[in-house]
Amino acid sequence: MPTNRRHVIATAVALSASTLVPLSAFAQKKIVLGFSQVGAESEWRTANTESIKSAAKDAGIELKFSDAQQKQENQIKAIRAFIAQKVDVIAFSPVVESGWDNVLKEAKAAKIPVVLTDRSVNSKDSSLYVTFMGSDFVEEGRKAGRWLVEKTKGQKGDVRIVELQGTVGSAPAIDRKKGFEEIIKADPKFKIVRSQTGDFTRAKGKEVMEAFLKAEGKNGINVLYAHNDDMAIGAIQAIEEAGLKPAKDITIISIDGVKGAFEAMMAGKLNVSVECSPLLGPQLMTAVKDILAGKQVPKRIVTEESIFPMETAAAEFPKRKY
Image (cartoon, rainbow, N blue to C red; front, top):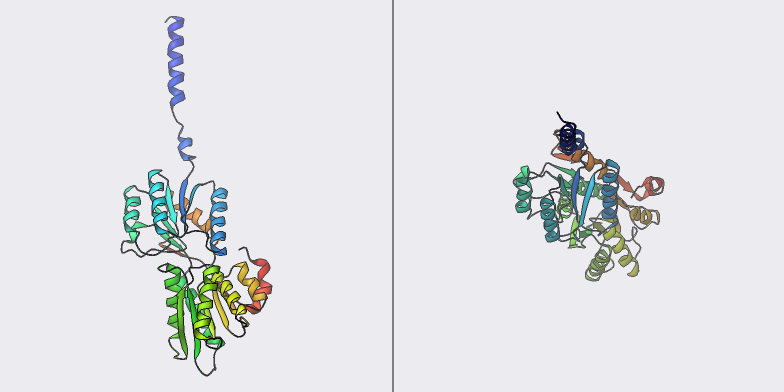
């Protein structure tokens, strides 16, 4: 064979070999996770976002992050964008429980697994998502109710309660109300005299508490049950501005266990906070990897949590990560 012909064949073989993608490259392909967050309405949510971002970085997962600004239509747009981008997994914390079936069916048709974090959806078809990880909101409400029952044991007369609910239609608002009422309904002395959404924000919590105080009068409220710490902290301002002492004149129960709540407890302005951990990032990244590896993932992954009365706040505060 002539030398120049041998050279041409060798060059062709070398070029064809260079176009082959080694199997290891497929194995090392970076996982892409599309995540739609509710928004940044509270200390809790900010900590949750940070946990997810840092855990994705640590796990070597590419994160496409979208902030819905507490609007369902923004989340649906984000999920559709993730589907179009052909991400490997979609995760989201739904603003409200209902109205997700259509977009989840689109994800299923595209063969993209979906993980629900922190909040669940109200769907008859549970095959539309792989797993729901997060807190047991009903149990959080029960913990708040049990604490109140124990605190008021032997107390005569009505216990007049005002309730600051979370975002209307959201899983935590529905379930925290349900769990609390389940416990207090056994004793007719407990009466929820006012209940209104504070949308999980400090500003709205303050505004609604001002309206409660105006409607019920300074002596008409014994207990405030807030579905999160931020609303409770806003309400504390309203209580103080009305000339009352929070945690003394009005017993205050809230949920989340953020640093702001611990500071309020140490200042003697909040009686108790039921923990709801936002640090779901590492758990989420593990689930994402397991799903893509074909491993069996539990349909429900519950976060372990505690309850912190004001008496324990100073000792616990240095341990808080959010």
